[in-house]
Length: 197
Image (cartoon, rainbow, N blue to C red):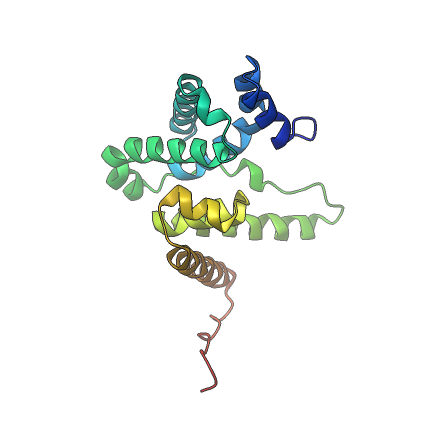
């Protein structure tokens, strides 16, 4: 969502029944919903189809546009569409190792080329570690840490209780950290100790 189109502005327009509210919603949420779809579908064409499906459903259900949870609703529709598309091809895609283009992990314009390369390598390792997570862990991590949804929104979207969501998120973070450390050649961190004893 850009600075000129705030969440409140979009919801206010939708609540008034403004004909341009859907257009505002598309402009405000498209990029964020598409990024999420890309991470779930792991294919740009499928993600685009899922996003189009979500906004088409929203156009048919204008009452949803008035709800403050419209972003979660859109992401849920995208997630479900992606999962439907993935089912027939899941085994083959996993075997072939398809993944999302790493364009957003390209080296930044830092002055020191070595530092830029190291940063790019680390970002790429994190992206690949996230992509390698099993779907339940990947979804929670992407929604909470990448897309910045609240814990409550993630729970509602995935149909999880708070404890289950926190457990998956914690485990996903551990798995990503361990995989990045493994790729970097660092020894794995010792397991966390619970309690005093």
